[in-house]
Length: 131
Figure (cartoon, rainbow, N blue to C red):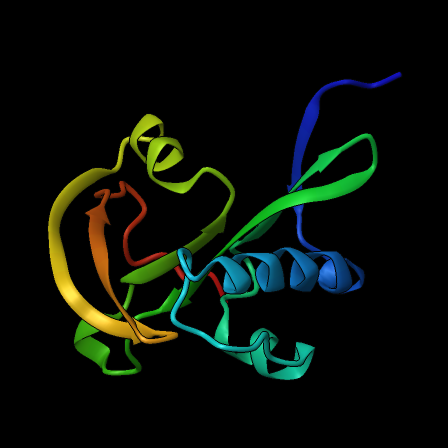
């Protein structure tokens, strides 16, 4: 039995499992300000095709991450926002991200104001085309 977690490229057929994880995190109110998970076509259009991964354990998708451009303006070319759906802050720190700030009471979910932690990591491949 394979007990390792495998990181692989996300495939369109992974969307059902990815969406289920996304919906679980939406329900907690901790991972996103979204209220619903989009349909595949909308999600696919919003995320860079070459920068989507899933974590598989015993053949099942148990986590995912994807990049989306922060803006279509040319001055932001090569700048992306990461969405990662696992133990997020600690995982980001282990991957070299640093906390650069916290935006207090940025959005309200279910009647409760939520803070947002801002993290960044400078990349040696900034500007690379992931589409």
